[in-house]
Length: 347
Image 1 (cartoon, one colour):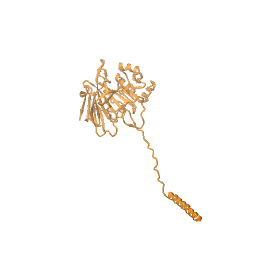
Image 2: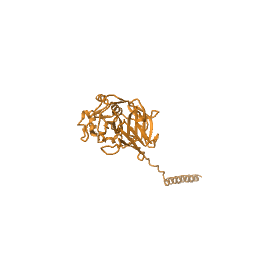
Image 3: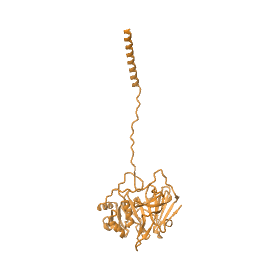
């Protein structure tokens, strides 16, 4: 009996041993399930130019720079305007317009001819927190600039140094400034060129077509009866931009010879008032009013409102009108005779 128990126990231990070996062998023969490698997702940061809505390689840290550019027929073609993110065109005196060229995404080698400031030019520069460049001033603008309403340099103080005179044109249509001298001027007056005050603008996303309104192929704007200030914008369907003409001539940049093109053309109807016997104007930038927006070959009738000091196109809800990414040209036109009389369209 004792021998039987010993035999049974030996057999049991042997069975356990064999079973264990069998399981170990099975475990060795069964391939282990490999876990997929951990893939780290790298999210590339997308940088967008604040004033154009276009994707850029690096974040823009340059403070906006606004230059008053002469638009007298003897000042054309102008230099450096193709690099502007936004160009504002408005009356300076009588039916003569001037440009405010807003630079941030890029600076041209040279800008000009540079012309004198008006009080509403200074107001816009202040709203952008821009470094402002002009040559000359109205009495109202002189007071504002002297009181440092905006950081600025003026050709009246730096004629022949920062501002250079061209020999192929006559004064006052021959004052130019280089990008290098703009930055030198900012250093002279102790102005920071870092972008601190963010301007908010709304742009269409890539998957939004933005084709809203009345299909329109051509836009004409008339500042008085002077043909020199009759501007035309023709929509290029293939390239989705507007080409500009002034007095029947294609608007080109003298530096590059390239024709100017724009993604958006806007018109804001504003109250104008003649304030002296020279014909200088005062323009109401605050009250809001009717506006036209041309983009993607369509006209939209909207409103404009003063948003943090800057006239902008707005929806009835008060939200900003979305712009097509790219450069914009903005016209301020007198409320008398008004948009319908000044701006003409063709289907």
